[in-house]
Length: 415
Image (cartoon, rainbow, N blue to C red; front, side, top):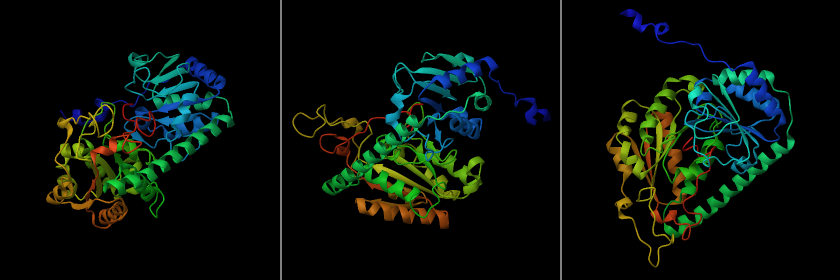
């Protein structure tokens, strides 16, 4: 029975390739578009097609936005990246969906209803599911991107690039506005607002002495992710991992951190240049409760990580009345309210990790720096318990409150 252990007996490297006719038709649609965009998802990462994606995008000035459980196969620092420029999505007149294994329903994507769609997928049965398409191409993602890169004409779209740059600046300006509001809210509530966590974490990871490509991030949580995902930058394949992908699963974040930690610890795939570096993970109090025991795994195997828990004493879907305020006839949904100020940092300590309890905005950055240093130099993991309040989700009391999704791109929750 030894042949069962020979991968050639049950695996194949053969992949479907796009027909010449389909590639030529797609190239013609790209040539006629003024603002084409590629939605690069799971299959692009799995087929290691990031070089082909870059070649195609740059040759014909095609914007790229990522979706799915990981980001970085098209760097956020590229001028054609729309991951952090969501206002530009509505302008796209041609959308090329590639590697999108589970399609969203009509209306979930923020694209113009009149945009034309190309979908590239290795499974023909899924091509038109949920979303009407104008051209379906059955192909391996890498093969299709390589064929398109060879076929499309060189093009410059300066107006499209300018619009993307303006949208990125507007997004950055909005994040700065939220940060200033977060500082104000933190001071008035004697708690840590999520906008402060997002800003300080982004500044530490990408604007400090650290190599901005170094740290792998597990981006989990529910409400907190709507702030922190705006601050993360994926500059290499697999740098940002979206834990609650597609089905909105609650609580996989600490477990996801174990998987990411093992990959970085062993230097697997695109993590090889950053082997042994710490992993940073974001989760909420509800999410941490589901998989907190994985702190013992991280500690036992010396997988250096920093797990940031946004502790707002409530489930992420907590609402305090239809009015969004605390007065009048506001009603609390007690099912989603937790015992206040639980010490998740102590839970981490009991499982072999370090613990940090942060109750003021000014204390988060020092706690983050200590925790990262302990992970990098000693292989220790830390739980940073950031104390917030559930009322931060109120847009009336603490604007902007609970943020709406920004899809696809920086959120990448369901795609």
